[in-house]
Image (tube, rainbow, N blue to C red; front, side, top):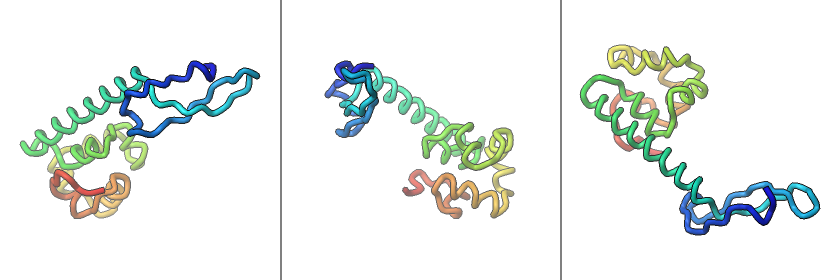
Length: 137
């Protein structure tokens, strides 16, 4: 992309009033950093992705409240993760995390496993045991 073609759709809120650094080719054929105010298409895609994560979080919350899933599933979506990302960051296989979504299995998890989830999700170990809608930062 050339420097004069870097998106500058100023009406997007994707960056929260900030700017994003993009690399573009200048008149001499060199790559240079150019500040972008955003791109409407990127903003729409980001908005759609966040709405989907919110929908998944609400569905997980309903499953936890009905006893069909453990709080771990809700906390995963609360931290804007999916199963693959939680598996990568925790070091657990996806099938094992899905197993931990079962309330009976989750209730028997040991301290070491909970400590790993606590570190990855940034949630206190005591809060991991029960459902808290806003577990903190």
